[in-house]
Image (tube, rainbow, N blue to C red; front, side, top):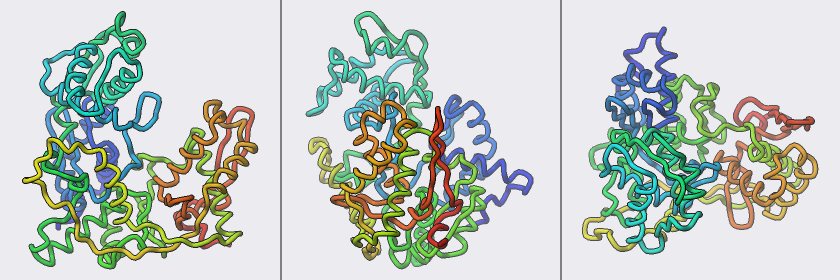
Length: 454
């Protein structure tokens, strides 16, 4: 493999790394998304980006005159970065189904479409899917459909030419919306790596490092790319969650050198694992801590859990391994897959032969304790929380725990959570309630640092 950013001068390296971070945080870039300066920057460095992203990570960059699309290799099933609705809630299965059906409809449409016509076309396709349907007479169905349309509009596949989608949702008989269709963006959004009719499980979408028989060198290269991807794509990679050969790649000094040169960010190592620290604030799609009640509640809850672990010595339970988490999640997703339409005689084997990791035990915190801790936080900081969250503490707890799971600070198990090592970073976090706002501050600045401080 050639050197990372080999053709980039030292004077231009920061600009190149900015392009890398932009592309990694926005897999689809268009004239309008995420901003108008993004696509020219990617075009400028397209050749070097294409080389580095493939050699370092095994990713493929596809560019057209009006789009740049990064096609990632997927190592694990990940539910921590869902599509979001207009009210910032995760998409449910209905919305994902409407999104895919809308893309299919737009792919065979002309340059413009009325929202009602688009809804009718999607409804006709949805009616052929057991348990789905789209009834434009029902407001919940209209809401779900417009969430999918809005997601596409935010990425430039659709541009509102006239009318209002929100008005159509409220009164479809009296309102309408007209959209221009950018077919180039439509085709860039949906580029599956497998023929879906040939798969009997969602695990068929994962990268299984096929072609192992090509030799030891190729196997080592594939493992090195996977290690870099894991560090890049996740807040932290714990050594305990990796097999022995992958742990060797995670500890290899070349991993840090390549990722730091590629992204401009620092790689931190501790006894428990390794992480890429986003000091730019432009690489991670999940800032923590950040503004908003869920993030602030999650920070305070993390501090409470860390204190609980330190002072009360709770029970230790084994955490599910990466393979076990994938198996459980795949079974849940596969349960919703239609049996009809799968070409069983062409389906591929979807089992990955990877070196298993040994289960590691971590401190266990019960759901009952978490509910009590959230009640205490509401009593102490409730006046600083937004009104919508203040009235639903159970939902706030669910969202806070979801955030901690996404950040790999805890892992969900039956009856509670297990506290993972990175949680120690937020031990002792404090908050000050002010008349109009509350600001939470961390005492630690580096990963795992708190675990070393008395």
